[in-house]
Length: 100
Image 1 (cartoon, rainbow, N blue to C red):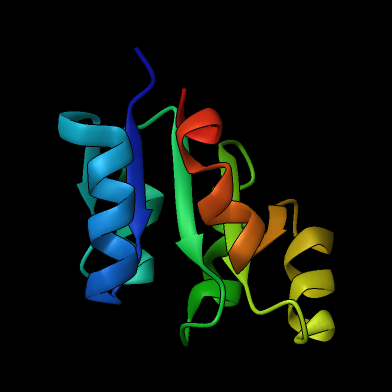
Image 2: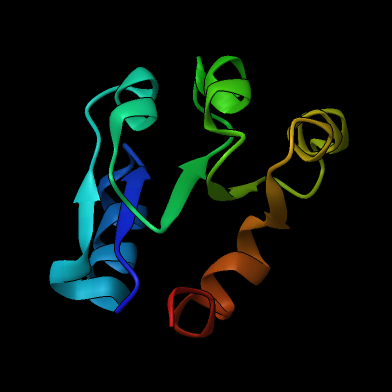
């Protein structure tokens, strides 16, 4: 079973991730907490401060990030740092599949 660590501070987004992953998800309090997470998959809200800064420390893990489709610079920077990137709408539309 895939274990998930997530940095998703928005409560609505967090509830969607929690509903899809159930007890397999642990939420980090800060982006920096993700480096120590023992999980198969890391999920991050790329729009939050500090997330891009920790991506290099997560290079050995599978990281899935979501953000606004209009913030192409942010999405490209995250992808360049090794993050799998999806626009917010596609991320939440495919959430169950992505966390399976």
